[in-house]
Image (cartoon, rainbow, N blue to C red; front, side, top):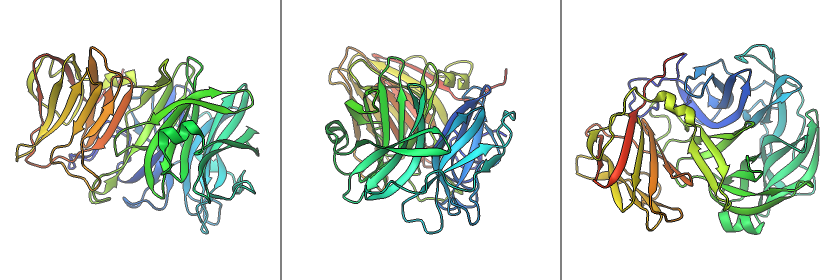
Length: 458
């Protein structure tokens, strides 16, 4: 089944992973198995609201063609996940794909359990059926730490051994990532706190607003640097951050640099797939309008390749496989005016200050992206496309250079900006019937734009 959105809703992305209807939130367990990418996600199959959480499932041979599969994980009546199968990861456990996830029972108070479910048939390339284990491998947080938030296991390898992080928040308001030895997935042993919000680098990068770290992800880059990604919780989902540094042999994370993972207001809970030669990341983009009014809510971003620059800053680029969605010919190759399709991939470069217009309202207001290479800034100005939160322009700062490049991926209401390979901005913009999708690029800039079209097989 295609992932194309219902044609009656122009705001629904057509080329990103989302269920045909109802609720979606966090991406879970990106996993490659026998030549296919598998991507799971938090999903309510009955309504476009956050409740009754299952694991939805889609897969792809190439990150461009995606197919739906039956729901992978369903809450078990009377079981440890009776009130929801919350976020986690998928790992290869001795040749058997195994989901490691947060179970929530009917007495849920913020403290989850760590549960396992195994692929019923590892020889099924679609991995359509999963069998949950009846007893959690971790029944709650370790004693003595006064933990009041405990969820979102993430399994990684270091020096040939398997370890896991669990997101946590403590009673005194300190967020942390807890470390477990889980080389045997049936036997988890608490190994201490990997890092918490009092770490100087974390405090400098994130401040003190977050009271919990959700969905911790830890992965190694090609150059040997390690990246810790956390979703910052302050009683509600807030934003995302990253720290780059070193993971020592004694499993101590020494942070070198850090910052916001995405500078937009509609990105959260990213999940990472560590491949031999790269790391891929997907995030959840929530709705910036009234939830559920269209019968669906939530979408996953385009896959992003994440690495580290020599100065310790994060390097983020769209996965190259996305070129498979390009139309045979670009719709724009030179400055000027051009009609914009509802889904496109646009690259603009500038050596001087340039303002690019992407959308115009009936009142004459414009949605613009302003590039200033000398200052090292890119500004997204939403014009009069309002939202409940502060609608001030978003300014992203990168090292100044002779030339500045911005790549803009738009799919329905989902806007993803890549500022060079150093920063991203994810925002939702809901077009009105009388809005005009018109690209205006002044002379002096370079521009190439491709409409996104359904990929052909082969």
